[in-house]
Amino acid sequence: DLVRSRGLGDVYKRQEFLHHEVPGINIPKDIRDRMGRYDDKNDQRKAGVDIAKELITDVKDIVDGIYIISPLNIWKISLSLLNHIRKG
Image 1 (cartoon, helix red, strand yellow):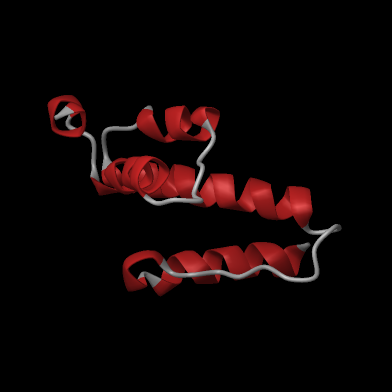
Image 2: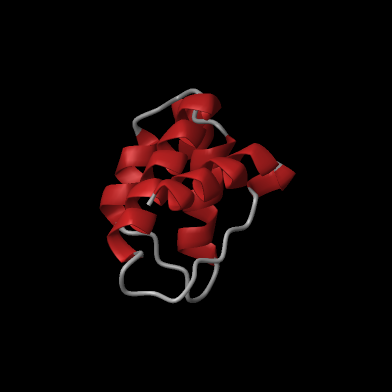
């Protein structure tokens, strides 16, 4: 399969699954491509956090709240996003 042949980590594989297999979830191609640039799952996680921070910054003035879910119970990711929100 494509994911194994490219040696991509779990983060990329999960995003592709969500995009292609879960009705109602659409991850834009530019975001999927950005995540696909990295072979190492830690680099993929960092890119994912960076993308989430960019999204938070873009919408913070037009939404009443943001719902954050820790992937795989990695609470440090959520803490990083919360700290980003607090810094405003």
